[in-house]
Each structure stands twice: as structure tokens, then as C-alpha cells.
Length: 200
Image (cartoon, rainbow, N blue to C red; front, side, top):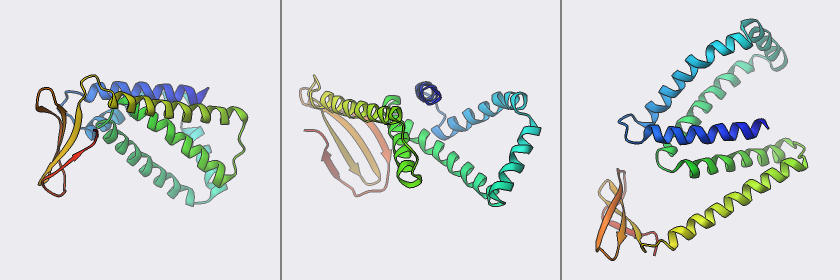
């Protein structure tokens, strides 16, 4: 139940974050920084009210006594990597749709679950295996449907990439109008003068 609520909240966060970044001059990194600051301001009073410094201190002492002083470095490393994970997430969300991003996050959770089963020998309950199977099946159906929509587009568009110097441009090419429609442009490092058909 908790995982389902977490997934649902994650999907809504992706949708509203994508809407918030659309048409704004703020970059995805600054947008994530603003969300982090606002979350800190909103959740800190609840953290003090529900847990409080006394429970934090007791929990910290228990963790240090059981794990040792390496626990501090584990906390620091986890904080850094989790922050980097969220930064990469928002960079990806700026490039793709919220639905595609949410499906990728679901597959990430499945890969983490499978890795923990293999590495840590975590026992698997039938309901866990069923949930993973449903997620994999749903992702497969989505990918097939998405590909089918692209290949059978009613306007019979071609998509191609044009690279010139450090510029990369993506175009939709409607053969009936004989005029490519630019949809994306970005400066990258690459070879010049390349043109590649992605869909025939």
C-alpha cells in the first residue's frame, strides 16, 4: 500500500513539475532546487512535531552503536547520491514526457527489487512477484503501443536528426508539404554535416 501511494505521488509530481517547467525561463536544475527548498520549509515543522530532536538523537546513537562510526560516511554518501539522482531525474524529465519518465521510474524500482533478491537473497512473496510481473507487462505493452503510434502516424511523418558543427536539430518531415518542421535544437559536441533517418 505504501509503495502504491509513493508511485502515485511520484506520478503527480512528474506531471506538475513538467507543467511548471513548460514555458518558464527557469532551468530544470533551478526548478528542482526551488522544490527542494520549499519541501524543506514545509516538512521541517512536521518532522519536529512527529519525531522531535530526542527521537533523532536516540536513533542516531542506536545506528552508530550497531554499525560503527562508518555510519556517518554512509549517511553522507547516501545524501550526495540521492541528490545527484534527483538532479539527473529532472534533467531527464525536461527532455521526455511525464508518462515515459514514470514508466522508467517503475522499471528502476523493479531492477532494484530484482538486484536485492539476487545480491541479498531477499525472500520474495507471491504478491511481490505478481506486482513485478504486472509492471513489466504494462511497460512492454506501452512500448509496443507507443512504437505502433509512431510507425502508423496519420500524417506519415519522418523524423530525422541534422548535425552541423556543434548544433543538433530534430525535425519532423511531412512529405506532403516538402518542408521539415523543427521540434528540437541543442548545442552538443559531434561530427558535422550528419543526417540520419530515425523512422522510415
